[in-house]
Image (cartoon, rainbow, N blue to C red; front, top):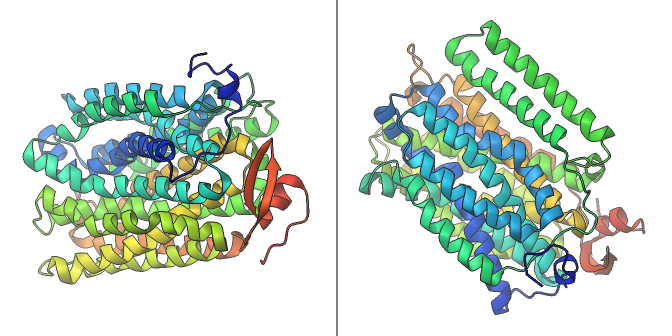
Length: 504
């Protein structure tokens, strides 16, 4: 029977026995990282291109914010639906459809004749990414043996984080060598390679218990809600709080409230609200919101600031984050394994604190300060903090949901991460005073305020992790939905109803 047939027994009941050290395990991680990495890169690669896009297409700050947030908006709104599609119809199938759609929308971005066209293409590109991200992580979570799952997730999250961090460097190099359009065009061959490798090396998995009907009403209310709120947050400071702006914000807020009500009473909710009864799941996602808001604001501000205020070339500005990439490449898998051994609470708490320190150190980056004295220390500390935080955070989220809910669990966490970055890029420029009297981007006066606000967000994430994520140690295997897993003590209690000993 075809590997893509979701009715096949192998698709419905894959044995979660894949080992990370095996060739099949390494191929699966590599393909999932490549696919999701393309989507992660496009969340940050455009930052290095913003000054060039502004010059070429005549974009003001509001338009540049939309180029970034348009992608994050649709990704955030539909990533949970993408996870549900993978659970229902097969994660490999949805992953491959997402790759094809991402290649097509990237081509549209590359040929955009106006900034309005580019924003529209970015909105559709975010929808394609919403198919890629949850399916890639769910494939890993549902395929690896319990004892290797933490390290595999750590490798995925760490290498995915590297993809996001390397985005500004890759973008800077492509802009300097070709043009800003190349940062989108490069996705086309990468998606083609990932499609071929996925067909050969990725097994199909799905959720036997996934509902037959998709929660389209919930997905629509979330998309309209986020869109209305973000429109108001961007256009209000840029163009004034007109009747249209206020109405959009009010409509968005009402739709977000409606989304919660829809999910509560739906027989097939896109986001089962009972997931949030797990303190670990809620706490990890709250930490995700604040840490990724801090990271999104930092990459947006710093790469543009280095070019517009300090005279860095796009390549030099993008290369500024390379130390962060190196740390995540070398240490992320170990951080994931550590979280599986000692529990995620302390790695997440300490890591978020270190992220806050790293972001705050960027205030020392001022005209006349060298890269070694200003930028390098901040990126090194930020890289260490993210290495400690990202893999344990992902492990904590997936440890709090059953294997059958791996798709929706990872999708919710991905949505929260993108929403954090989305809101930070929409709100912080106005909060930090980063516009001049014409509405153009002006980081000269507001950069320090912006970095301190971003550091404060990471600090809140540390407090949330300490207060809500449990300290736990691994216990013996338990059976969850016919799947043997190594769980943290609270995980045993929450999933099986059996007593579990939590240290906090």
